[in-house]
Length: 135
Image (cartoon, rainbow, N blue to C red):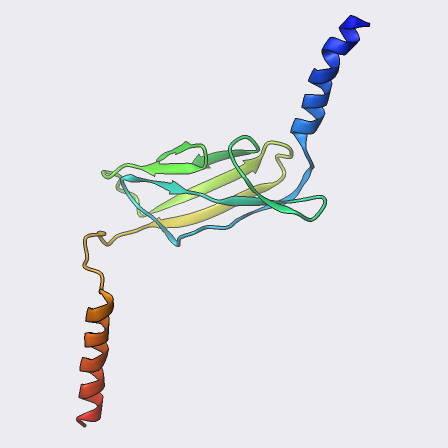
């Protein structure tokens, strides 16, 4: 009887930890390009049998890429990388027939460009308005 009681928590943890079966997976990317020298989060969501949608991570998915290295859901691209795009493959650990493939280009412009402040943006708008009205 004691042996059964010892294994019961393990069985309950195994069943509850497995959760619902994932019906489908899809990308929900936050960006249209990848950046060098940083971690690029690759968001993949899954639709469960009950209709709920939840984010998935490397516990449920296998991530691979043609360049860089994955750490969980984040793809690290070194500064010295020479490719223009990265092919990403995501495969479900529950069902290897559920797979995603995506090609994402690497950002070419540097992030050191100056962004407009609210006051400079208003100034630019007034400047272009004056030019149009002066015709």
